[in-house]
Length: 92
Image (cartoon, rainbow, N blue to C red; front, side, top):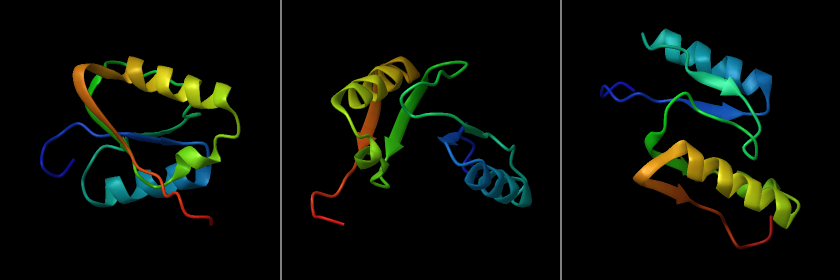
């Protein structure tokens, strides 16, 4: 966002979103984080790139949830855009 890109994020945890938005405002940026489920959300317009590199994908307990997440991401990222998914394979 500091480089001029539109940026936003989502989380189920309202406190995490509040913390993130406060930090954005502190740095003179718009509070663009929002509460949502990564398996069921929509964006106002598709983005060019998205990432999930904090291993939260492993919190999805079923194949149905994983498929729902990928469908939500496919709708959120414009055709030709990039989605980077990172997750650790080692036990927690």
